[in-house]
Image (cartoon, one colour):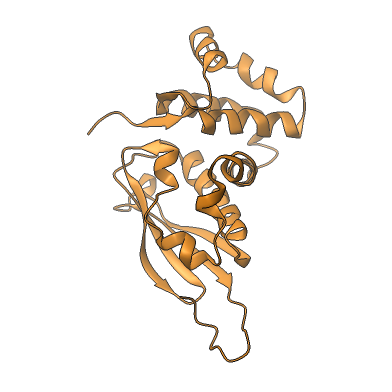
Length: 197
């Protein structure tokens, strides 16, 4: 299997999230990284590819600053990434008539940020889906938390009301793979049963 890679946009969205929280946060987080990683991050364009380990180093440095006082920071950063950068760059993929259309489209949002691997729907019913990560090594629970927040934001943009996303299986905790359960309220319209699709 090839070494995992990430798109620069994911790293830029993390830095933008830190800036939005507190202008002093980015410099504090960057100071926790070694000089080589700092230089690579500062040169990276949103469209560049980078080794996944570089963004993991940034996430871990940010977690050292935020994790003790805000254990949900990474879920919030994932939601921020999709709501800001994701919607800006990939609005056509995210803005759908309903979450069913978003989740079952042929273009993979995951693969626009990371590779190898993909996140795919393995179970679906009205207002509910289960997504499984296959072929990508998460390395850190921070990745799983980021996906949780990002999926919730994506469901909202795709027209899902009151989305709830839970990380129900985790490869880092001994499961065969990572899975997320997604739920949203399906609006009932006159003459319809409320079924999605």
